[in-house]
Image (tube, helix red, strand yellow):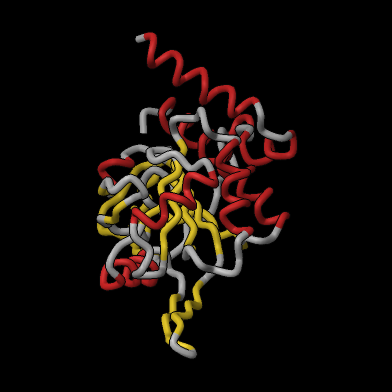
Length: 232
């Protein structure tokens, strides 16, 4: 019981830190009891099932979800959705020798703000098949990335690239240039809700986009609490 109370308190603290303008998203619209939710990206399919709202039958919608995966983190542990059950996930792409060093620095700044929030996890997925746990460890140590909170993942390209293209809905191209591997990919940070749905894309080197990501993480936390209150 005490553990639950501590976790609940931490989540509430994160809500109290929300900037004032975000109440546009979060406050109920009084009698309508609604709030502005974040969009859900990807393909949407109208299901054959229905739910009821004030006596009116509404068709259910099946949203795109990021599929399960099995990648290895910086301490050689296998990570999948089972290990992230109920978590809001922030994920970005990288590779160890990338000339764009600021992306992981930017993720670090955001991750530090949620270090004590048990609802939030950060994942950095390498696009380079030569990135292994043992050669990512120095990078993660330098960034202060702790496995279990901010995991640096790697895997076989036969798994990683389809996950990026079909799951995260980003482009990834790997080619050789002058004997060196080159990677072209969507340099965006992605926000996933606890049902593995994509709720936002944010340019990883844009200050305004990063501020928006920080705000919208809090929106998702509030959405989770609201759903919990409503029994969903």
